[in-house]
Image (cartoon, rainbow, N blue to C red; front, side):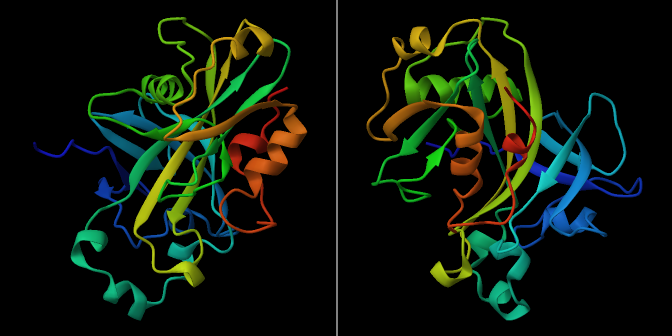
Amino acid sequence: MASAKRVLVYLSKEASLLQRATFVQGVTGFYGTENPDGVTVNCGLDHNRFIISDRPFNGSRKAELQRPAFCPIKNLSAEQAASLPEEISGRGVDVGVAILLESVNKRILLTRRSKGLHIFPNVWVPPGGHMEDGEELLDAGLRELQEETGISLRGANLPWSILGLWESASPPLLSRGLPTRHHIVTYLLVSSNETHQELQEKLCPDEQEVSACVWLDQDIAEQIVATGDGEEDSGRKRPGTQTSVM
């Protein structure tokens, strides 16, 4: 069976032609001058390309793009980059989507990834994952939400917004090995018209991916998600949690 076509990141700066982001390219640093770990960009999906630009374009939305100071891509030396196998260095930058599901009584759903997963095992995260060929951002997020938790909101026409972008690599620290995955994760806030108790009744987690679920107040969810990339204190909040969602 042929591998599924991946949705990749494309970059434009100062009205330049679109270029596919390379695996070893620090996307945040490409735009961040005053602050190399955080910058406001314009982003949007166009023909299976996730475009990031320093200028607005048709259908784009403004978002804060951030990365942790310890980002492996940022700290990768030229020698380390050259040592990556071609199947890794030629991957480009993938696109992920994470759903911050907010109940009508202002609780946020977090899931704990199963310990058997290769990427970020036992880490508390919002439901989410990769984008599939032809999907829109919200469709991808809601599909992952249903696959991981059993909660189906597709077709519910709920209000949503982009909270921000997070540049992520795996392993999350160079001390754990050279990176094998590089993502820009789009954090979406989806506001439900049901209480967390009502949504809880619909939970049916996929045990292969999710080992636990919890509904938390915003401030607690912020603290957990902000340290999810591998350090006790990353020094930065993820973009999805920096914006008030309560």
